[in-house]
Length: 150
Image 1 (cartoon, rainbow, N blue to C red):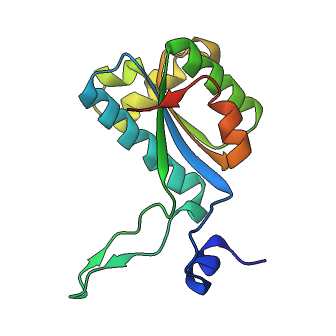
Image 2 (image 1 turned 135 degrees about the vertical axis):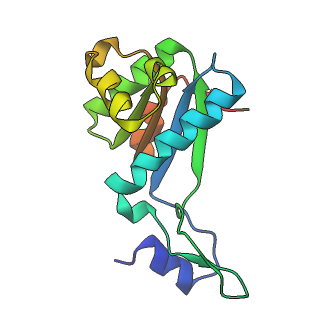
């Protein structure tokens, strides 16, 4: 069976990925918070699922650039309740996920970020963002009730 990358190089047809990368943001965030949360959340997915990272880039002059995700990242939004439900569904499906809680806006480093999440039980997390990667169908079920970010 060919990988998606192999399929990309063998044909000129559009690539359909069998997985999905999605970010779900709480709909009451400020614009700067939405960008910050999205950036932090997706940074974890490449470490847990290295197959989502493509090859390094280079321009016509040979300047090297870092590799990025090899598939689109879809961004959704929803209410606090939608986010809480999606979190539960992602956990029940054992999908790789990353969380961002409201407490993380008050910390300034990785150690304090991890301590803030560790201090709160799973069902009491004040989630403002969730990133998830997995089979398209499973991710679609996790995101039930969310809508595409405008």
